[in-house]
Length: 453
Image 1 (cartoon, rainbow, N blue to C red):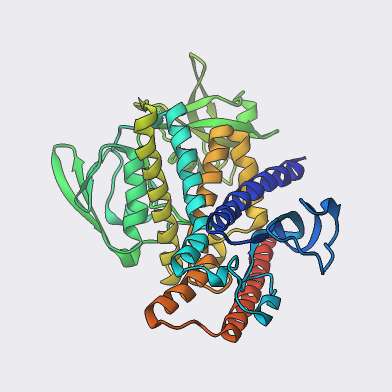
Image 2: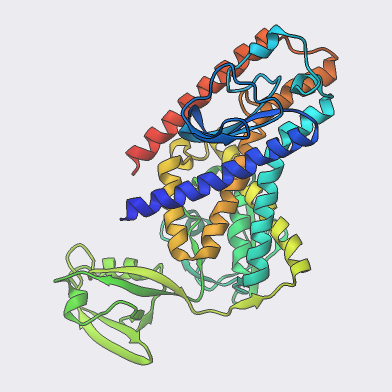
């Protein structure tokens, strides 16, 4: 059942992203008086579609059919993207028949460079607009909830933070001279700043202020391993209790919150370490169920487990901010800028070898899983995930790589700078090579998804 729901949500996300992106190309081509011959969801052979001449039909259209100024709206065989076929343009359709006659007024190649640039940029622009609109709506209807806290509640053993000298109870005043007022700012700045430079923390410890420096070279791949600090106010919550384990014996139940071990308070991060350190030794466990506080002795297994899986609850201060529809727009734009910065930071870390390529990329399988998980969390998380993918699609498409929108823009830039067109034979070869490289990359991403499934 989970597989079916993952496929369902993937189809929705895939359809929306492709539709919005290709609509950008389509509508601007129409506005610039170019003929858009095909609007396709998917690649390859036509499965079914509709146009004003043949109406709804299955299979391929007759090869001698002249749609004139009409468009065939179709669904193609392979769900790996989509495209708009604009007359007089060398693209991934590999159709070059138009080169046998002189340029016609309605063809892409006959229009001014600025119009061609607008058409090629429109898909990326539409994806960015979609992301802005989604974040704008989420922030307007839901507001934003932040944790106005800078106190560290837990430092992971052997983490980068532990080696740098952080301690539970430290309050982070600033990072690289950026003042910190809430935990979300700390997490985002640690990730973005650590991609290219050292981290200098100004912290308050008891009544003194200290500087702790974390060298760029010592930082782990933060896409796979956390920096090692958690905020104060996080407590462990029992999610599941294993049959026949010590936790079941003492009566722990899902939704119980664990407060202390041997009357020493524990956080969501420290609980497993404390229990493991007491493997085979009797401990006094304190937990809370509703408003009732409970306490009993239990002996962890020799592996250092009591037989529970945990989630995290935040009990610290919370600040909810509501926005008017006008205020929500710049906040939505800020979310898009921040998400773009995170994506580009990850790409940079892959290039310099700081992040694992295979662990950082995701294809259809991974996207389907994440789409399903976000949908289970509610409409806002699902739409937020859609917005993030829309930004990712925009940034990938703007890369100056053949067969991508950025590749077409690179050709136009060359023509504008050197005042001469790229020969059609060169365009065709470059497009074909780029397209097959993209297909190979997609195959690799799919394989990577499957082996990590």
